[in-house]
Image 1 (tube, one colour):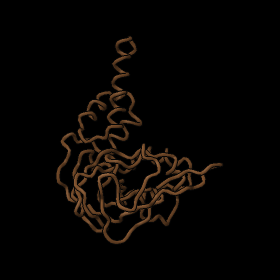
Image 2 (tube, helix red, strand yellow):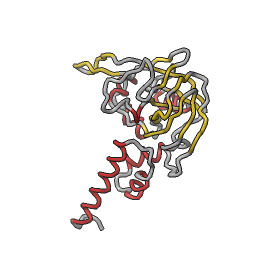
Image 3 (tube, one colour):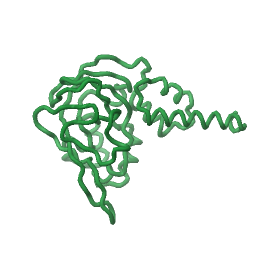
Image 4 (cartoon, one colour):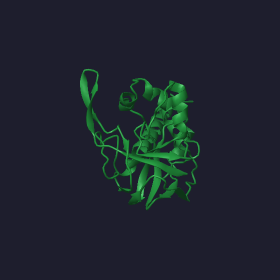
Length: 223
């Protein structure tokens, strides 16, 4: 498991239909080592601080293995590091192998997987394909966010060394598919809530699902 590239950008305005939007999705590789802090990487920024950045989404990682899939699926070539808006382009860390709650040492930093990445319309802007966020989500190849447990410098070539595996054992793909494509899987929601590292927003979504189901049971809506 390796860090192939560190990618950053500051927010900028881009055209979107008849309006402009501000986005930090146009990440570019940087040379040398970069300080990974509790809320982001030095030199990186997010335009939408409600849905990006912060303690539970300090850095976004995306597996290089998915690049080939999208080249084939979209019939495109020439993808560069940071193509999907990721801070870390990683190798050997696909969504079926990495679980929320897994802890890794990378460079001088220690990080914890906190949630899958829910794509927004800005990924469609980046890819020049408005429907791409739906394709991205349906593929399960969504990447994952990292929480920083210990700040430190990171750089291309660093190894992700496993420190601790989450005992709950729910992979990034499992939790992503559960939220977006498994609305009736209440046992799955209960299991997800046992994953202590899962970010607050995702926990709230699963709690709401269970609360609605409980309300339906009380009113006779569920058998």
